[in-house]
Image (cartoon, rainbow over all chains, first blue to last red; front, side, top):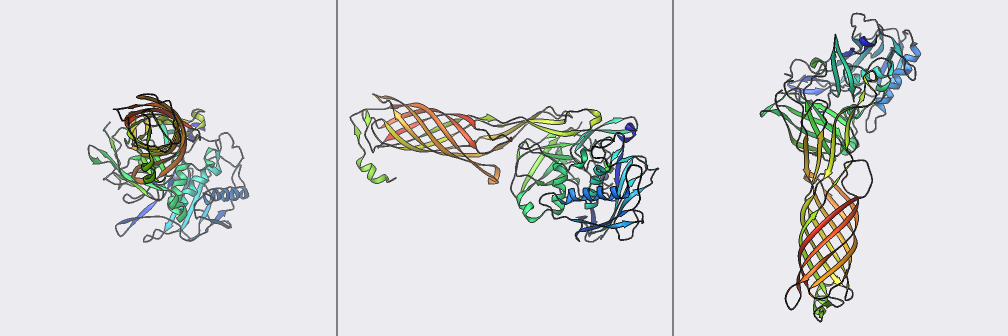
Length: 332
Length: 213
Ligand SMILES: [Zn+2]
């Protein structure tokens, strides 16, 4: 069980389109030739919960756990976000019925998928109007305070899926190793990393700096935006832009790691929601998860380069952007 | 400070010791020492089935580098041996972070960003002057202002300092001279690349010209 669990990924139905998408990784779509972020405009987000229980989790426990995961996102400082439990329902998740439903579903064929989030959105404005989440009842789940051996912690996985529901894509902030049949996570510093920690742990009940920067980028208040800053620049190899590079900003003052991606052939990136002050920048190829966990096929992901640091210590201004940063990488 | 009347009454006493009200202006080149901050670890949360310690993606050794710059002082004698002076120091040190021990073998790199640094201070000096060579000791306190890249962030702090030096007077009038000084400053505040709120010791030496009037 442990071996299988370590290889799990969770999927989202909407993948990210390249170009102009800022920071971290936000889910996006294209309208009239430009990229727009998927985002809720009507708050609170109203959601129903299925009245189905599974082994180890009653329907009431399920609802309470989902509510707690929502509140974790809602209570991020500097974020204007709210949610509301609308009631129990017998409707299954993933129906396109303009009602957001969260619940368990049997998906034995998806033997590496713990949960999945789907969306209905306005293709012109990117406004989210419905999002459903299912948790795969083929796995063993737990809501125990300290977690349970060989059972996946529902709150941890719910926090990840609700991050998707809010419009966040996957983070690249994790290290994995290839094993027979798949990848195992060695470490991660984002709840939104696409591959889950092993069963039994509750470590992903807590949002990390990368998750917080991402949600602030989408739903940050004006006050929050004025108090944080951004870095924009390019990753280049022999003077040519590198697409699909994972760029990490590290704040040596507080140890925070926040990631972003180059999303076009120009190698451009923007990382927003950063604490002001000096930051170290590091670029690496996206080789710790399948690239389709992050992007759709429109991004020509280049993984043929060695990780490298910027020679410039970037000072993130308060409420502004440090621009024209270039990280030069070399082929492997 | 009223400069014009002071100039009118400034006189030297004999050839050795200035009297009360004599002014002294000096300026020259400055070397300011640097200091290191705590090593910063870029840690990821470890998957519990693969270990217990955090996974360190890389580490960084932050530092405020040494710098050269300039300084100027304007002083006034309160007596034959005691004077007060105000001064300003200017320098352009770099903030650096040396990254190493990368989990995926990224080459070690020093990332740097220049800052503009001012110290505006006041000091009390006691001179042991006799003849051409005049040793002195000083103590004082000052205000620190550090401006980061593109004027994006300004950090301020304060300092106290102590030190000593020597003045060597040229010619018969002994109004012109050479001044060399070494001091140690204990700084609080200013730019920090770690979470420690501790004082930092900064040595500095300077050399330049001095003029009495
Ligand atoms: Zn996911």
